[in-house]
Image (cartoon, rainbow, N blue to C red; front, side, top):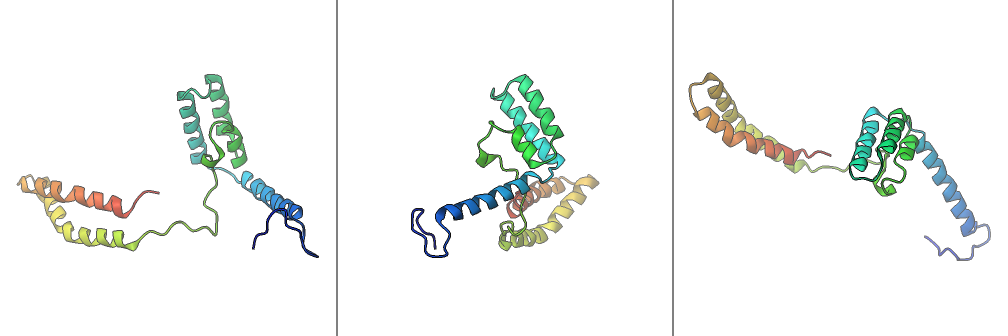
Length: 164
């Protein structure tokens, strides 16, 4: 149960200022641990792409782009990358936090994948026959089978397995 900030504390209950100080201390510890985590090459590359986009939008100058890009490529921790991006993007969009343990990825429904596999099993013979007829060069019927079934199956795969 949360209490208003100016609510009087009872005996043995720390005041709201003390609770805030403890919370702030724990938050600073978590931020320091996050800033000390090592970054990957892909994350450095992503920051360099964002810097290039900021330069093309006219938000930073050419010398500043050179300076920030070299700092980004030399960055070892998330804190270093956040320093490189300072002033370019609001904090809500510059989260370099990896997926933390204890926070599972969102679950996907089984139904789209089931539909994909059922349709795939039904259309697989047609695609196989179309491929064999196309490569044997005996009939145009194979090309027609491929043009009818393959794009639909690819679209169904993209629906069942979205990129994250």
